[in-house]
Length: 162
Image (cartoon, rainbow, N blue to C red; front, top):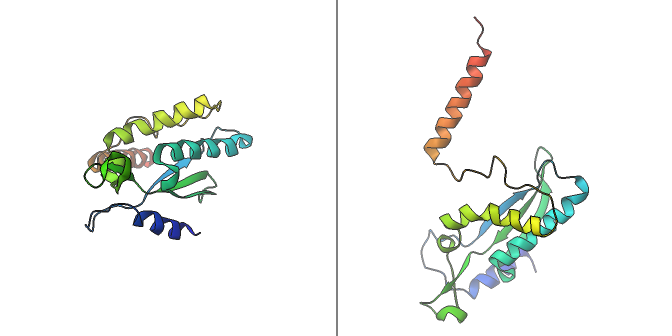
């Protein structure tokens, strides 16, 4: 079965709000740490997949692909349907709905990398996913723009000679 066929089949069994802004598919991209030896890449991706599948549900996994980006850095694309229990439409055990807001909330975004790091540590992998890119939380658009402007100004000033 293709990934799209599985997605439509699984989605058909879930409650979905009848709104245009409902996100019915979500994804994580997990990049292998640059300092991880090549012979540990396969285990890193297998354990990352196991972590994601346990976290979001095997039945909600639509696709997982490992490939290299343009610079040659291997990473995993893990696509899943964000499914939450739905007390309103069938009860906690039988009712499920698609709701990215319930699954990918602020707490999840804060806890994701530390939980992945713990899973990798527990599996015996010495792979550091908590690094400068993942520590410090999310930034606002304004913070990102200010940071980019500051870096641009530094680079510009370094090129100026007197």
